[in-house]
Image 1 (cartoon, rainbow, N blue to C red):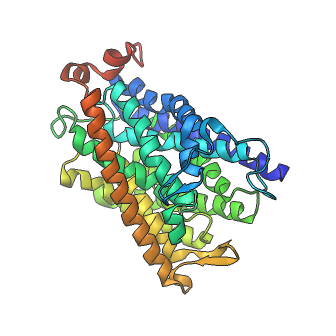
Image 2: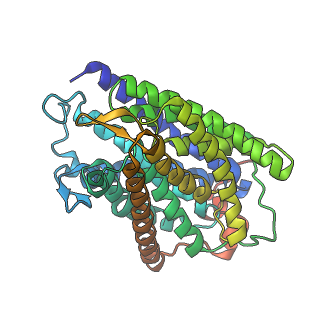
Length: 406
């Protein structure tokens, strides 16, 4: 084992963990003050819930021995056979270090979905849906991409979670927004973010933590990690600029919310490509991602669904673009079994086709599975808060608390 690599991965795991409190701030500032605590709770409570589920069975379902290319076996139930030694003979990482790094991804992914159903979901519905979704959607996606399953066998490239994290959460967010219905007064009342400085602070925390998210996915303190760190920053910077440019041209006003949203869009877009592409390509991926995601959030107005905090437009669309862009710009920096991973612009058009198929499979599976889980949970415990709870605010009615004493 390599002490340097283990130290690096543990630091990256801490950075990824910090992203979830950042997400709590980002989402919390965007809702009305009467729902700030319930929205923050969706992210903060997930740090406990997802970690327990991951240790009990989630890690095994994600990285256990392959079962039909779809799911892992029960080799690591209750973290059995996951020790301080290397994952495999001659491996550089402690198995426990790899497990806890992946645990942080499992925490933030279901938390991302909460932006779609903010201000109108029951807490019991949130807990049960998130639990089932983590085990029945996230774990299979994780196994199919990173655990030796179908998409990995196809040759699909996903460096740090374009499909596993962003497309999956974007698909689930679309399902929740459509099946849960619109907030009371949607389209008639103004839904003004109550604390944009909180949101900008959250975006800054996400940007900071994302270096661990992407660079850590190299699973070693090496040149690929350095490349992923640099491409992450450059793509995000470009997306901030292009989002603001698009917003300024479209609405006549550049906004702090636009800058924060652009940063997240760039982070999402570069995630699947971070280790595979060069910095100049990252500028293009982020720049295009900023404009695409800005347009994506306009779609909810055109189609009339209430994705409260724009999870679909940013994570769903941004992750999709990033996956396809990987098939365009992969430059051979990363090699699998001695074979450089190349995209269309480097002479391998087949990779773009593989990326397209992986996008279709990811969206199809995640949409269908999320819809089934939503319906089951709605029948069992109910997903939608009642009218009185929604009018008074979920902080008081569901948690007996208020975010501010004025």
